[in-house]
Structure formats: structure tokens, C-alpha cells
Length: 184
Image 1: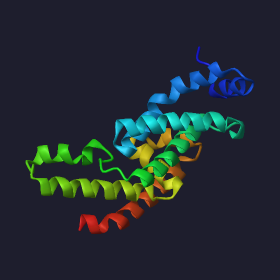
Image 2 (image 1 turned 90 degrees about the vertical axis):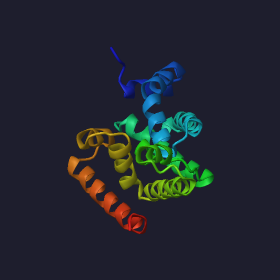
Image 3 (image 1 turned 135 degrees about the vertical axis):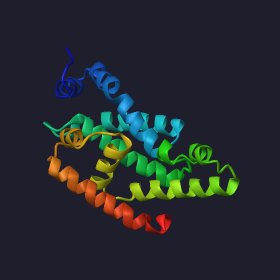
């Protein structure tokens, strides 16, 4: 039987580091996926994943009792991605759906100008997402990058489904406004 997160956290705070390793094993893949889909680079995602767990471990005593650890570690990851993105300004797309190399192969536009333009657009989209307020950014990333349902996001972030839907709507509207020049 799998030990609940809150017990693992309590035992870690009591000095049993192996319990935190169980939390890492439980959430490492999801944290990495968020970082990878946000940053678009495996090495950067590995760096952010490692940094997220280090930061979580060092701040574990500030973790609010009764909160959802998954939401907390995902929030840490999201914030680290913003910091990493702003510091490095990567030029790889957010998702394979906007991957310039993949898109150019699909529509036959292999010329360098098209590839550069698509990379520029992908960077602009990624930047627009990262500039959203945290509550909108988190639900946009979880819904559209992680592919989670509204119900799953609601449970993960411990907020009502109606709030998730509102954040999704408002986040999409802000993205639509910001990306209007790109769309035409």
C-alpha cells in the first residue's frame, strides 16, 4: 500500500530522508514533463526538475498542512520554469504541436525562412504563457500541456471546478489578446 504524501512529509520533517525520496519517485516524471513541455529542452527540464525537488526539500517546513503536495511541487516547477525561461530565452517550441521542425515537415515548408519564423512564433507563444498570472498559467499548463481534465486540475490545485473553468477562460482570453498580432 502506498504511503500518503502527508505522512511522507511528516516523516521527512522528522529526519527520515528516504521518505522524501519516495515523494521524488512519485512525482519526478510529472515534474519533468511539466518542465520539458514548458521549456522544450530535455537538459533544461532535467535541471529544473532537480532544482524543484531541492527547493521543495529545503522549504518543506513551510508546506501548509492539509495542502496537496502535487500542486505545491507543480507550482514550484512552474515558477522555476519562468525564471529559467527568462534567464535563458530558449528558442524551442512549447509542444510538438508547435514544433517548427515537425510542422515544416508536415506542410512541406522546409525553407529556412519559414523555420525561423515558426521558431520565433513558438517563442512568442511560450513567453505569452509564462507571462500569465500564476493562477491562469498553472491551469493553462495543466490543461493544455499536461492534458489534465478540469476535474483533475480541480482536485490537484484544491479549487472548485468552476474556478478552474474561469481561470482557463480568462487565461485563454489573455493569450488570445496577446497573440492577436501573431495570428493576424
